[in-house]
Amino acid sequence: MVFWKVISATMSLLFIAWAAFQANDPDPFLWILVYGLAALASILFLVNRLPIALPGVFAITGVIWAMVLLSQAEYMELSAAIELCKEEMASMVAVCSWIPQKLMSEKWREMGGLLFASSWMAILAFVLFRAKKE
Image (cartoon, rainbow, N blue to C red; front, side, top):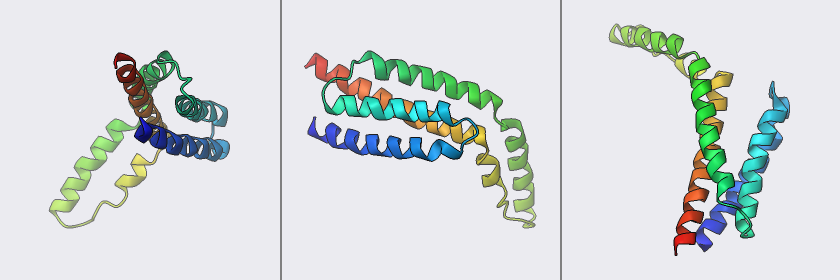
């Protein structure tokens, strides 16, 4: 359990930093809340006060929310860009350095942050569940 406490302390600092970096985001309060909740859950885990429902609900909600964002992302445009890039690569015309720009859109970044936070919450829920069984 000491291993998970060290990881949780590290994750809480990471989520606090990410929450602080949201000040320049188009919707800062929402993302400060998301990362703040992840930091709070990590801190509660450190002091053995984290109820198993909190990370479980967060993980499920975050994955559903990420899937909604995926449906809103520019996937079709990105897919077409990849196909065009394959053609360009076959003719050695370009190296398609513009594709990462497509992946840097707001929706893709938000989805990545949600999936990262949700994954961590799922891990915390699993660790709590396993510790409760023992």
